[in-house]
Length: 120
Image 1 (cartoon, one colour):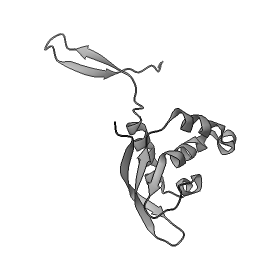
Image 2 (image 1 turned 90 degrees about the vertical axis):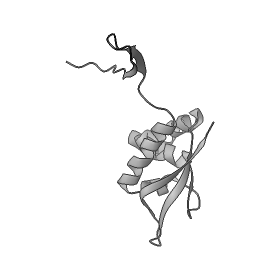
Image 3 (image 1 turned 30 degrees about the vertical axis):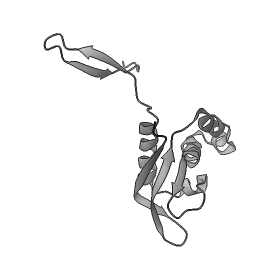
Image 4 (image 1 turned 45 degrees about the vertical axis):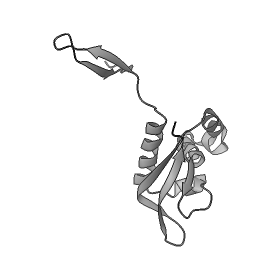
């Protein structure tokens, strides 16, 4: 099973010297990553900071950057943050549940996403 994934940021992290860093690695998240992030004082003050803390834990490498911290993640361009959030969801299989359905006419099998939200 693959547990570490390579990535290339669309824009790149710009350090204080103006150097751009684009390639890195992200590992699968553990329950401990998410639990400890929810206890972080910055997250307790601002729940939307959870993403920053979790990403700082699971990104293990960013070329030429020593130590990935929440401060590094904060300085990413928004396109890069969105890219990493999407990657996190994909590699950790955070997807809505699906139901396997069979077409009564042709017999073809397909997946239907289950939507548990109620409208109306």
